[in-house]
Image 1 (tube, rainbow, N blue to C red):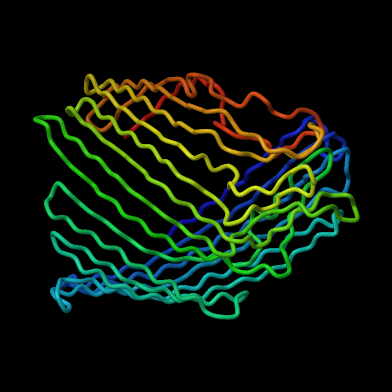
Image 2: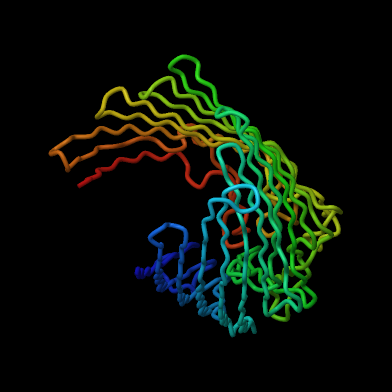
Length: 441
């Protein structure tokens, strides 16, 4: 059994030494988070029967202020309580139909209550959500083949009918050096308020509030993927290459659209259903290990994320509807390299490449809403570490390095109380130097 408690305070804006409602702009939250979980596992003596029972809960209380222009009405409180419990049973069979298999079945219950209140903005949300689920799957597996088929049935209290979600995954290894995989899966998102919908963003000296469309329908997804995993040794050099293709179709995809202002003059955005969308692409990853002292791994993805039809996001007539999904680069990748010249000394180098992407920029600091194509970012980090072996069981480590070596960072932040607080993109930190001491016992 585990229990955790977190108290977290965050504040951004100006005049940080003043009360929030006496400043030009402030976003402030204080969270008290209680979380606990417990589980029970049973394994029979012949290892054929396995039972897992689990229960977890999280209870969040948040006090917040999202306001501009010394607004005394921007205080709010949120209580978000969640519980999840379930039981799984697995049976291992030496042969079922044509191959050894493991059949798994179970039930699960998810329950959530959310109460969000901002009286100054006339917003009060009381939401109770529960999902009852049951599932059944079977995996046939031997050295060459693995075939997993399964189905999940979910009954969400905000959706009239139960939702059936099938899945299938197939693995075929004609040799130990070649592994081929293919899969199909489905899923959904319920038409409910999520935590991100409660976040209020300062835009142009006002606040932006998200509301749900009265006719919001569930979002459904179908995903197909295929991949080839190849292994090859060139003498002492071990290599691995993964090539993967994926295609996801989203029906009634969730969108945010600016629809005007409320009686208090706050900007309103509505979460509604769009025409649908497709996300497809190719991912390639490679690993090389010339020896135990050096390893290199890198990967890259080329993808396209498009709505079926152009979708509006601003009520400004000068802003055309857009088919391209925002904040989805067409190209992105990474690499990690580690070098261990000696048992005590370690060097690690990593990097993340993010290609251009479209972002929304709301009026306030700028004259009117617009779209912006971001530049390329390459966030690289180097870390050096040296271990001092005090005893057989105790090790001291000194480490240090530089994060975002090239200072690849956003240059055009909005400023002042009229800024768009959501206009942020790229790496989260500029060039940063760090050092640390680690004790392992």
